[in-house]
Image (tube, rainbow, N blue to C red):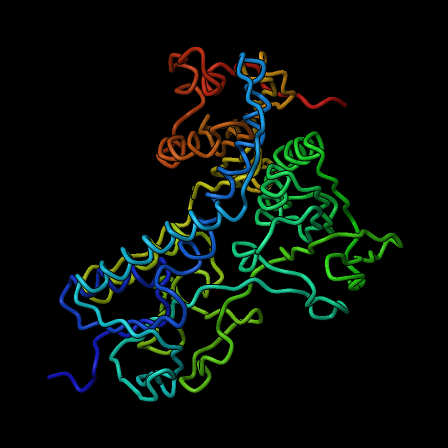
Length: 457
């Protein structure tokens, strides 16, 4: 008879926490899960899933215009923001119900409550005003968007959490940030008919991606009419009237707007959890420090997902949660493999990437060969769109192994998911070359790039 109420108690029912809890319960553990908001976490409730619905909606804005070149015409086009949000909310409600049902079917107890640690085995459920104990505790509270509180008027802006529930679509939006969230929402708002200005303190957007990807996305966003201001940041924000704000920049200029959108990063959601009561070590960002098996500095407390600040991606959190359950409840020690993780930015056009960026590869390997192409897709010839596609392969010049693939263009994310399998398995450039092209497709260019790219001197 265990001395604890639960074998495992999970704090946070996002992607990582739910996967870990379901598997642990399936392996026979008695599991409790606390979630203070809604089961499904950031990805399902206020992140990837609702964002992708907004991406789809905004793409229709471009699609109606492109269709004219193919003989289509339509009159009295209109867009209903309220209808989009209602339909999005209905689908999120459905997914939330599925997550709850799956946890319950696995035998887990769900508590809709904020949970904090009193010690390494005791969890306090605030909504119920009581404590429960657990042999093992999993922290899976994810991350949360933050705003720069040093900026006067910072609270006049919204974050991605708020953007999914706006009462009306603004006419003009200023986006702060240059990462994937900033880029995606800038494209979303532009596609839905807003005027958009993006402000980023760095030299160029998407700084952690391959430079060619950054340059291509920047060019495509400008082509769409998105204004991008780099190497400056917000100095202060002031309210002009009920529907207008003025953003003052450190370069001495200002921008008047209807909405300020903060997308300057996310931080691990560990504040006020009482982790210090249990002796859990955090890093300077507030993330839980863990080893390769997701174990914290306390023997029985583990953490997975964005709260650990390793790789902040939903599929990674799911894999980490699964590895934790295998290790702790199925007698099958398992580590997460962080190599060759495919990534996407749902900009317009979208980005798909896997493996090494060129600058990373040149730092790690002696000889690097680059193959790339930049072209207008066949689909754009009749539509008149000037949108271009970038494809790039980074190859080890000594072994011929493909180290990285980077695509900006229609279908990039879908292509990268498939390519990631081969690249992770060690595919060579010769094997790319030996593969018969599928014509006519965008993807055929991946197997027809023969000439090494030589930069102009």
